[in-house]
Amino acid sequence: MRRAVRRASIAICFGLLSSCGQETATDEFSSVVESTDPVLPEEPSAASSGFVVARTRLPNDQYAGWEAYVRGKRLLEGYATFLNGWISLPGRIVLTFAACGRADAFYEPKTRTVTMCHELLATFADVFGEMPEAERDQVVLGATDFIFYHEVGHALIDMLDLPTLGREEDAADQLAVYILTGGTDEGEQAAIDGAVALYRLEEEMDEGAVADEHSLGPQRFYNIACWVYGQNPEKYANLLLRSGGVLPDARAERCPGEYAQLEASWDRLLEPHLKE
Ligand SMILES: [Zn+2]
View 1 (tube, rainbow, N blue to C red):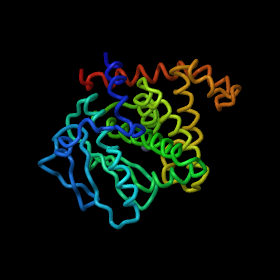
View 2: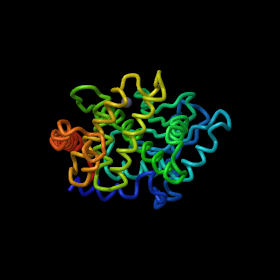
View 3: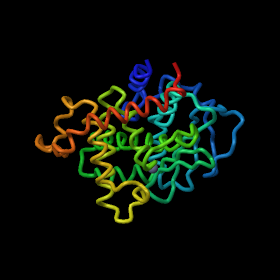
């Protein structure tokens, strides 16, 4: 049942799809908070629980193009629609894009805000700069989906007081893969795009702003590739090293088990909070 919910909802909700969030058109804006301040104020008009989209005004025009792009795609609205249809929260988690001064994405427990930085999208566009534009757009959006759901992982761990074994960063990566592999090719591709983006970022940024407390990019890359492979080894046989992919057989053998464990853990942790 809950798998069905995750599968059914997810098809309309990724930035990969230009129709993302459009079904909710104008009504959704009643829960949008406009802010001139990077620290978001409480807004009585906004929903008191669930994922709420907020606008953080840009300090200048440098990232106006990216702001227009994500607004035009209704990216955050699409994420919020999916998440609110899937999971119940005891409070509000704010989702916003901002110019942060660095290529980053983060969750702030104090304000319960997930901030996606325009600089991160711009950096993704740079690291995939050799691709034709349409293809690059897809990969940038896929990687953005992955990073977004990673941050949602931090937010859910905090708000729902979920236990994590091992590093929270790895748990957040797991949750991103768990959500993205909910049954669509687009979601699975987004997880792979996220993995490749992390790998390339690590290569390009020596003091990677995205790296810090996270596992090293290549390590996360192999984990994510392993989980995507593990949830459907026949479909993702091309991820095997011997098929021109990246996973050595010794690791690949363990991937179905790793994914099954990941999925069972998150199923169990989230079940009390899922909507029917
Ligand atoms: Zn993280």
